[in-house]
Length: 259
Image 1 (spheres, rainbow, N blue to C red):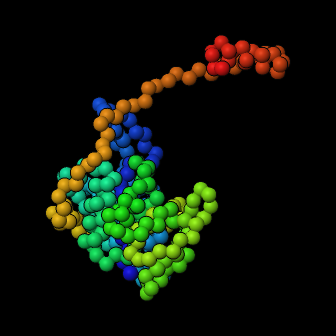
Image 2 (image 1 turned 180 degrees about the vertical axis):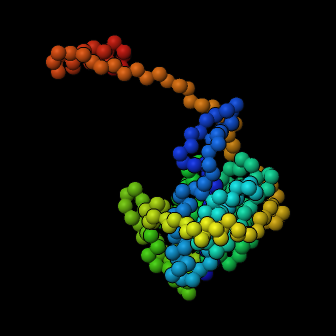
Image 3 (image 1 turned 120 degrees about the vertical axis):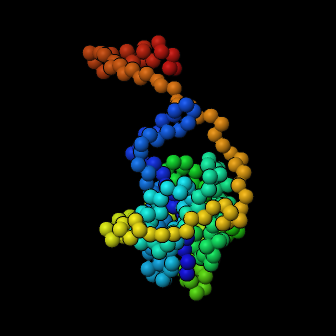
């Protein structure tokens, strides 16, 4: 059994985003693994421990953007692949899905492709379903629990966490799954795992390796601007009694034409 976990490198969630000359800037924020992807790695490692699966981390970004890969390897993943190319700047979800799908096909014999629910920088939550669409695999999004997995029969049963409640879904391999934080707390990388990850060697693929032309980006940000600043003034409504305060409040509301 082979599992691919797609991870993304993002700015630290404690960082403040600003707009500088029409471009988004995170300043000197530290780059980390997308926190949602840690749940995906945890799910893959637990499945591997039970069924003897191989866990391969797949990431796309610049050649020096390796924190997400190192973190996943330190958690216990077996191997990794980085897809990087100078033309892969400012891709939309559709183009990204096509590249990830091609990389998953190149890895070969993949039973499960696992994603985090969403990324903290774009927050669309669409990529897992889009990758499944390109691959032609069933999509099982928002999974909070794996109830049953049978590698021999090529089937799985998952529990999905929805706003309305829980949903039990049966599926077949190969499949694309996205995991929610309801799955359980991700493990911390061990010291030995961190040391091993820092020395890890893994393949780096460009579009030529994937036998792809540069994908066309259809959706892009034509302009980015900071929201206008608003001055907020607080005023305490005075009055000797609750009735007088209420009357003064109504008067103020009418003066400000709130109603």
